[in-house]
Amino acid sequence: MDAPGLEPTERRLLVILRLAHPPNAAEQEVLRGAGVDDTGAGRTIVTGSLSRQQVETLSGQPWVLSLALSSKRRPTW
Image (cartoon, rainbow, N blue to C red; front, side, top):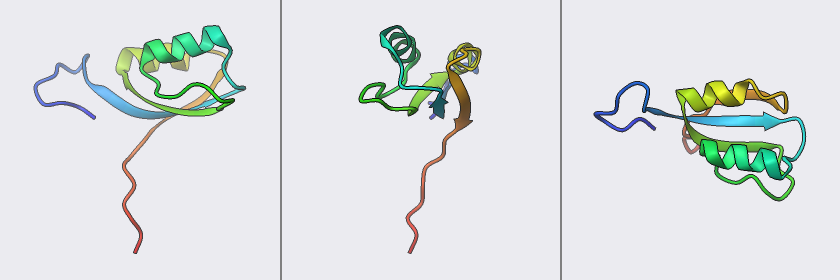
């Protein structure tokens, strides 16, 4: 997540993206450039650590259905 001392414009957000379809080569390049982890193997749900600007850019893509903040999961006992 955010590292201490970073400016607000440089801070990273952990996000989950739901895509309309598995990304094609051009869409994979956009996702990778934005910091999305794994974009291959027919995935329609991907995660990444994005800047606020990258969140804004991806949220405007027609093939991105939703974008949500992620959180660390706690173990259930």
